[in-house]
Length: 337
Length: 239
Ligand SMILES: Nc1ncnc2c1ncn2[C@@H]1O[C@H](COP(=O)(O)OP(=O)(O)OP(=O)(O)O)[C@@H](O)[C@H]1O
Ligand SMILES: [Mg+2]
Image (cartoon, rainbow over all chains, first blue to last red):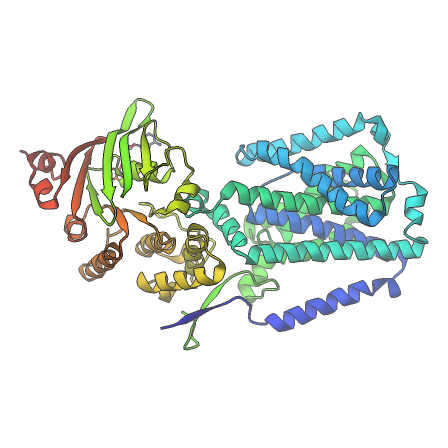
């Protein structure tokens, strides 16, 4: 009896085509959308990028970081220094910002990965707070007041319309790269190793999985992308300050909300979560603090009653998959066992 | 060359000595059976060989190399695989994916060759019919089978089995014995902890008896089982 392995979901080619169409339409957005819409879309793409990376860490690698704002902030600041103070072109400054975030992430990972569970989570937050304090004391980057991006950097990207379009394309590209990376990673044997580690670390190590190395690699990739996303998000704002750059609500709480509500541990989860988050934000904008309370309540309810989030419910009900990472055995007589 | 050599290996929980200066040599291709009363330290001995627990004193050699300080992952790479007495399946993954973890990472293979190994092992262990089921759906017997399958998928030089035959019917037990014989005759060195002595001695050529962390007998199965001390300690028969 022979058998083969199928990697694509039931509607693989159709979904790929639809996905490509959506990305093309989004890429054409500057042709028909105004600047405010582009700015919102850019922000959404940035959040989605952060959410995809946080999901990779928490949902697959078992790394519960509540201090990812440190890499958003460091990426943003690195970009302002490299592009703003040193005059490096924007396109080169963005990957440098990501590299700086990953460079700082390495020693953090080596130290903090010795801690377990809640201790690790708290420690990541402490690290983020320390980074914010250090930056606030660093007068070369404006201390507590922060700094603005020099106008010649903004001008290097063209007039207002050209700049909005360009930044949108950058954000969209980064988002696609992030999703593509997460997808390919989870499809590969490394992804298999991550899932195994998440389920049972001792058993995984006993079967030859290099648990620490895998975790550090994912962490570095996530921080690299997170750093670039931070750079883009603050390139939009043209201003950066410690309180905005290292804001735990903005860059971690919202992102956790997006991932949890969309579906922790599903690559599709953040997509759904980000749409929901921005819809709720628009709806509840007039209610002040109630907005945060509502988001929190919704997240807790999801964790209690639908731990797989919205996409988990959809997946279980309809079996849909946009990013099939699983493997199914098909017997050569066409049957599935 | 000896596949495994333990040199006065000890382990303790605080004052409770669970492994007491165990020495052991295992030539290539040998199948060693381990018996002993509950809590004798049998599973702990496997933990010390795989590196899940670190020895307090003594040394562990594998294929002539000192692996006392090696990580579990490094030991797996060298060719040691085990099944856990209380199964530890990857619950969020399918049976096939569970086995594939061993085939890719333990075997250091690319996915395509690993896939062939995983499918062969599923066939061999009778799990093919459940290949696409999430491991969380398996009952205890199939979970034990999955433990064996994952270990086999690494194509180990040294296979460590911890009570894998418990709960099998007579028929199942016979085919299980046949499977282990096949693995043994393929040249895999083996340590098998089992309370079902008739199954054990159908496969192993040596018995090792543990009691309170220490060796009380070792040798030919029939001789060991006739030993008055073994009968008193293990079988509860007064000498
Ligand atoms: N975490 C622990 N702390 C203290 N003692 C422990 C701990 N874990 C196990 N032990 C003790 O270590 C001893 C050896 O345990 P081990 O699991 O190796 O025994 P075993 O021979 O495999 O028993 P069984 O036949 O029940 O599987 C037992 O007496 C057990 O009570
Ligand atoms: Mg035991």
